Image (tube, rainbow, N blue to C red):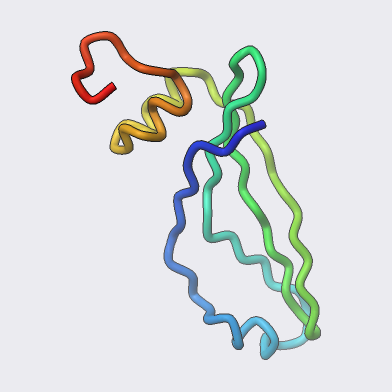
Amino acid sequence: MRVVKVYKQGVRFVYDDVFNIPVGPRHISDSFWYCVGPGPSYFLAIPLVEAGLGRVKVSWVVRPLAAERMRAALVDDEQALRDAFGPQPGNLLA
């Protein structure tokens, strides 16, 4: 699998805050990773960070995307579109 774009959202916590979270795990997800696999096949991967009691653990949620959904997610990023789908006919930037 190859990552073609990482979209980051704003995070509620700064790095030091992760270690000061009250007892009990908190889940933080601040990015969406758009990936291309064999075939081609398309995926959205979301890292879930579990932070609490001075520890940090990352797990991933990976969901398949239809080509149309992938194209819509990357519509504002010409480079990511080329990386995912190759040069597009009629595109002067390709």
